[in-house]
Image (cartoon, rainbow, N blue to C red; front, side, top):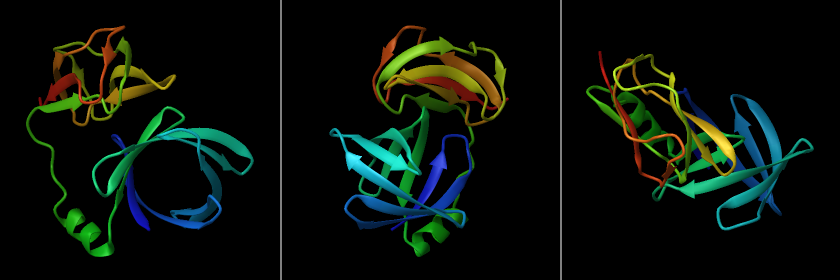
Length: 170
């Protein structure tokens, strides 16, 4: 199965994932192929071994064809796309305009508010730091602009979908 993978604020890559049997998966990214051993260790948690290194991955389904994967404090969104759908999506890639509201992707606790309302931020700049599953995740601005609202405070517990902040173009 082919997936389009993106990290929030990062570039999108094509990934081929193939199960070869007994929990062994072959993953090809940018011409590099690795084999991983993955075993479900909880309802949404997988224990993964790759090249002798073990780590956990939390998987959160997002609709019929997508899911988010939290690995080592980084969240990756995977969307299964056939070649035709991928090409159509590329040609119709949205341009972010207007105010952008940023919400929590999973439950967690706000560790730090890095930027304040009224502050100018660049695309990809950290605004809020959220701890989820004992890993800190920097939530960044999707556009260059001005933070118009910080909707959370340090120490606050948030659920998936909770508004974190709003940023507007300059």
